[in-house]
Structure formats: C-alpha cells, structure tokens
Amino acid sequence: MMTILIKNGLIVDGTKKLPYKGNILIENQKIISIGNFNLLNKVDKEINAEGLVVSPGFIDTHSHSDLKILEIPYNEVKARQGITTEVLGQDGISMAPLPMEYITPWKKNLAGLDGTSETIDWNYKTTDGYLKLMEKQGVGLNYAYLVPHGNIRMEAMGLEGVPASKNQIEVMCEITRREMEAGAYGLSTGLIYMPCAYSETEELIEICKVVAEYDGMLVIHQRSEAGTIIDSMKEVLEIGEKSGVKIHFSHFKVCGKQNWKYIDDVIELLDQAKNNGVKISYDQYPYAAGSTMLGVVLPPWAHDGGTDKLLERLKNPIQRERMKHDIENGIHGWDNFIEFAGFDQIFVTSVQNSKNEHLIGKNLIEISEIRGTNPYDSTFDLLLEEENAVGMVDFYGLEEHVIKFLKREEQNVCTDALLSGKPHPRAYGSFPRVIGRYVRETPILTLEEAVYKMTKKAAEAMGITNRGELKEGMFADITIFNLDTITDVGDYVNPKQFPIGVQYLLVNGEMIIDNGDFKNNTPGKVLRKRRGISECTF
Image (tube, rainbow, N blue to C red):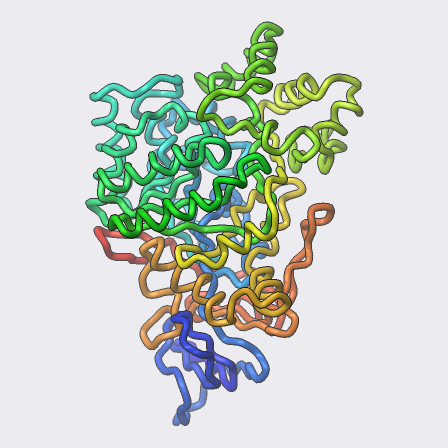
C-alpha cells in the first residue's frame, strides 16, 4: 500500500472553486486527505508541486483509442496531455458487439477511424468480451465504453442500407439491453457513417428508451453539422424528448462558410431544449478543422452493404458518374464535405499501403495533380486502392466560432483523435491547448473554468462517478502542470509532437509521468456502469 504526498501545489479541484495552495495525501489508489495538514507518518513518495497546478486528471469524452489500446496499452499520446480517462465506442462505429460472421467486413468499415490489426484476437463477440480483453492485458489509463449503434444494427440486420422493421428494432433494443448490462455508459451513433445513417428517427427513439432505463446517454454525431443542421438538431432533441435519454452532442460545430449563418439559431435551439427540460451537453476540440475517414465524401448510398459493396461501385464507371453527380448537386440532409470544405481543404492523413504514403499531408487537388487526373477520380482511385481505409483532415470554421462554443456551459473538452498516419494535431494537443491558448495567452476562460470543463463537467456528462474532482474518497487521478508553459506544440504539418507543461500524472494513485518521465505501466481500470452507478473492475 503506497502513500504519496503532493505538497505546496496550487489546487484547482474541478468544481470551479477558486484555486488555493495545499497538500494532497494519497493511499491505496484514493485521495485520503486534502488541504493543509501535518503528517504523522512517513510517506513512500513526495512530490513538491511548488509553482505547479494540481488538478483532477483530464477526461477525454471522445476518443478513438479503441483498437490501439489493445496493441499498446500505455497511450503516451493521451497521457502527455494530462488525460487519465478516455471514453471509447464513439460515432456508432467501434469494436463491440461484433458477431463472428461480420468480423471481416467490419474490420474494413472500422479501419478509416480506428485503424486495423492482424495481431489482436477479434473473437470477443460482445461488449463484455471486449472489456474483458482490455482487462486481461491491462491498461495505462481508465476506459469507459459506449455501445455503438452501428454495431447493434449490424448484429440485428446486417449492413444493408434499409430502414429497420418493427421486429428488427425490437432485436436492437434487446442487444442494447445486453450491452448496457455489460457496463456500457450509453449509446453512440454517427448519422453520417454507415450503417447508422440508414436509420430513421423512430429506431433511435426506441433504442434510447432502453438506454434511459440505465441512466445512460446518447452520444451523437448528428446527421448534419452543415447545411441542414437545424433540422438535424431538431431530430436529436426529439429523440431526447420522446425517449427521456440524456443528449451529448459529439464535437459540436457548424461546418462551412455558407452555413455559419446558422450558428445563432443553433445556440437558440440549445437554450430552448434546456427550457424544455432536455438534458444536453456537448464536447468540442479547440481547433477549426475536423478529421475523419475520407470515405465520408461519398454519398450514403455508395456504402450500402458495407465496404466490399462500396469497392465494387468504385470500380464501376456508371456508379462513379452517379457519385460525381450527387457530390456536385447534393442530397438533402447529407453533409457534403466537398461542398463545405472543398477539394483544396481536405488533406489525407493516413493510408494502409506504403505505395501511397507519399500522399499523406497532400490535399485532394494536389493528389489529383500528382496522379494526372481530375479530383473526383483521383479520390475514388485512392479509396479503392486503400479499401476505404484513408484518414483525412478538413478545414471548416474560424477560431471565433470555436471560442463561442467553448464558452457555453454545455461544453467540455475532447480530442476526437484518430491516431494513425499523420493525425490531426488535436490527437496530441487538445487539452494543453485550451489552457495555454484560452486561459493564459487569450483569457477566454479562467483557470478554474477550464479545469472544470476538462474534469468534473466531463465526468458528469458521461455519468462517471468517483473521478473528475479532487476530493477525499475519490480515485487519485491527478494531473500536475506548469501554468506558465503548458501548451500544444504540434501543427497540421508536424502534428506528432508531445505538448509541454504536464510534469506529473497519477492514475489510481500510481505515477504515469514522474517529473516529465513517462512510465510504461498499467494502473488504469476498465470502468463499467450499472443502472445509474459508475463502477470499475479491480
């Protein structure tokens, strides 16, 4: 039983209270004393935090470490930001549930977001099996899981692009109940991703009624973040009102210059929903560019039936012409990335094949010039060659919009980080950037407000208890950083750069970063939720 004393630090406890100097005593994974006190017994380790800020460990409510964490359990990329807990299972597309007959097609569908692996055991079948796989190998940080809508739909009715029947919805509800019983914190969906995009509102309402029974939340990449965002938000709010589920919008934003006019209307909808009693929160990364799989530039029908069917269509000249037509003319309700970002503002960040690695960091216009063809066909060719496993960054907004949403009370911080190839700089820098840029350099938030958004606010949004606050009896997830230096370092050209300023990191009372030195140890826990109660496995 190790005891650690953190002394002389500026304590920012996660509750928005004013910072104060004090000491924290840790024993057997938890905080046992906090404030100004005299020690009667010798401790195993002392950390002199003079001149440093002591805060709860940061909580990343939108993570894509789902696959990587099974290969490399330590996750230095997130730890260096001060993150101690990640929420997996995002965007309706993740690891579990995964019936054995769908392993091969699902690996292809997942590759653009979370990467792929030939070394892990894919035969875990359910959320319980996936979480046990993580527990068996050990994890460096803490992990909570959302059951993905796309996985549920796949198990119930395959990958076909059709509305669900009443019977199929009933099967989805039963699958959801099984996965919530296994400890999922809620349901995620990504209504621009297949097969989630094929669902109708009623399907989500019925599934969310089950989630609400467990006091879980719907974490949603909504159907539109661009031209039809108002209708999209109304759909999400309807789901919340009719199911009783708590709503958490993923990576909240409005994409494309032509759609910025909707920002005030979006804010008005948030206020109206709050007045109507709908529980709403959202997360946000502090950058004016996004990142996802390149396949989203294709119209939804192109993905019908899964990746293998998509590749057949990409080989067919007639189907290619239809794709071009729909991209150029649009489909109502579909977020057309090429329309709101443009070929020149979409950059490839990852590929699987070495022959295409020279295209990483290039935009779609540059790739078309390299390949000597038009931007449509060069994009289609790349997706075909890579079997849809291509990552991308797209530029869609302005910093002033980031700030407007950052200041809202519903907001908490996330990374939404794809970790393969040449990733978005948010993968390495989101949390230090908020403090460095928006607390120290351009004071948009106070220090205590920023820490609250990264800790207690995030924990409350996800339903995670016993973490997110410096308080006696809480698990000792603690970040200690230098307020004068903390900042992100990576940019879009060289994103793989660790931030600076995080000096110490403790997960469940064990050192992960000790005076700047990262340790490959696994004190993390797989968190499981039970009917309104957050638990962890020991």
